[in-house]
Length: 462
Image 1: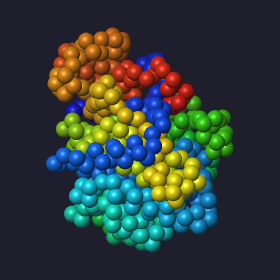
Image 2: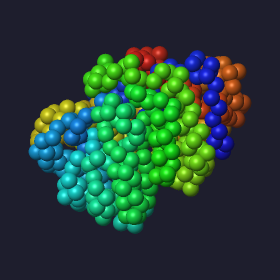
Image 3: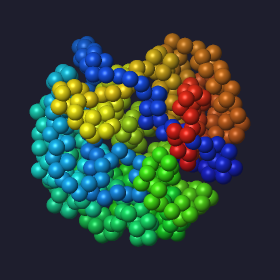
Image 4: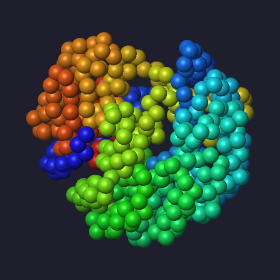
């Protein structure tokens, strides 16, 4: 597929409104009360049939030693490691309880430790956690599973990286954000290029299957010139995947962002220029623009899956594991089993109290009806592959697409006239001028956007 992107400032200004990132549909805004008994029924049903789906595990480690001012993640800032010890005890018990709900023959094809800072934990604690997981779930030993961990380079040394590989992780993601010292100071995350380079080289020497890095554009004191220097260093480091996230300044929602001086943020014009520069430099360096904020080498699984129309998106971002049931473990984590979303309690004391009482700590969820499933598939195909095969959707859901989505197609006509999409009876193609606006295109099919889930819940699309 053609990977080019066209920047049209007039169109971007017109369409750049707040909207979901579509790591789920419906989004978590729509979740409602959902308890342990509901969850256990869903888990039991997922084991039925002759070939139940493989599993994907997401484990949330909420702790950080220091706060990054831009952060909008669920986190606990503390230097007291005793909190992590207690949390791990409860997390281990949840893993045991959850493991009892699922057929042990179902392989774990994907595992991800996120946070927070997973490497806040010591090497011994991480090794013990992986042992608990393997005791309760079927972890693959053929290196075909995708087992990843998020790493703050400030919390590890090169020798630590090898330990992570030895205990079973084969993919690694480093949070970098920006290499400019002034930007780092403004967001309270100081790490040198040499520090990052050494741990990335260690990951390569330890034979990790994939090395990913995260950047953020739109941070305070960032300029086109300073971010250009960061990009040049990233290209030298040569990771397999790169994510460049849009910083959304929402201090009313995320208290730590109040420590950022809004006057230091780049203007919308310069922020757009930084994004344009990023896409240009990374594609010139040989990376494929996957979409939204992700890039990958042409031979990477994400790029291959997108070329084959098999890319998927979930709460962990773009993925090649569309066929997995996702189990969320730890406070605030979200899972999806079949057509049901569930989320664990967000407050650590409430999470731990449920575990002490032998309860699965879910507190809300959502069951997709047939219309939700249809719209989720349409949005997934567009946001992952930039195209929609209409006859395939009609066959899969037994509908007449033009009749079912008559109102939505009327809305898309303006986008077609603006040069964002191509429309006919067989397909919807998102063309180069529309790729930066893919989230906005997807909102056309989101029936909840005009209801209580207002745009106030979301960041701008770019």
